[in-house]
Length: 500
Image (cartoon, rainbow, N blue to C red):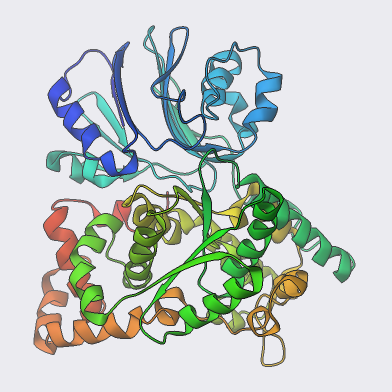
């Protein structure tokens, strides 16, 4: 949370700022810190994961102060390159030292997920977000004040109409404005379609994903895995289980679903195969419907596909938060390795590659938003190894034709082949289902919307609401959203509109 005033403190008063910080307490129940520096205010709610005892924020280096959300996985490497001195073991301190010593031009050196604001006593200010947009950041500009926060709920109602998504891979300073410093997909685009032996490609994919998972096991607290029983989460669990075994512990895994749902059964199968410490929860249709208003409010979106998967994700995070603070998920694999059914209809390699690039670039306010909001609602951090920059570059470097599926070749064939030996055969070659479908949420929520909204009510809403709801289900979610965030500009914050 941060405020920057161009000239003076004409923005929100100190008490208003403190209240805004506390609206984000669920994102960080372990610590709270604020500071006024230069013409800025910085506020932070801490979820203690690395350097639990000594990493409180705002962090300070001379006259530089930092509040940051996220993890820097290469912080040990960067520490050896920077002068320091370092005063904590926090991975986020390398952001502070990097900017203080080398300026914003050094931002591409950071590998991880992050959104941060930095202020100096001399009036300097920097805000930036990681290239994929894994960690959220919104901003709003009004009357000479610029406000930044991780969620919509931090902003007072009169700020919502000017609110925008801060774009991934960008940095903002008062002097130079908004600039792009990195693209998550550029390297893969530059080398797209280069050929190599298929066995070499398979080995490269496996090595990159294993490295990405191992990096994301970095923590001073327990790390678990969301396990749906699908290919992607099962791969992550298999690799993470190996890391946990070397650490002489059993990996924590978590699954949810309605009674008898396919995801629960498949997750049990994987957990038994890997020998994990497995936890599961069965939720009812009544529980799913009852939690809907809260899920939409926490999700900060009414996109039906997101809400359908957010409901089981909410229950899953609630379950995991009882025993750990960090989980790994399988987000991003479908976008990189063409896991979605509609991609079958794209026959040209260049067209398929462009579509995959577009889906990766749109993740920040779609699936990644759902993943972040549902976990952080329960003070749980989600990490996404498939969206490691090295994995993205490699996946987009591969010939798009290798990712095509048809009646004779399953989706994500390359990914399945790379990890088939670590998984049960029926899991490695299980057909994909969406999380909301496999967990049973989709049918439950569709039935609720059908009962709650008449055909006439939908037609009336479509005639006067902008944007017009596309279905009864979307109208139900839209009404929840509008009640909580009146005046928010849908076209600047919702996934299907926002292009930032």
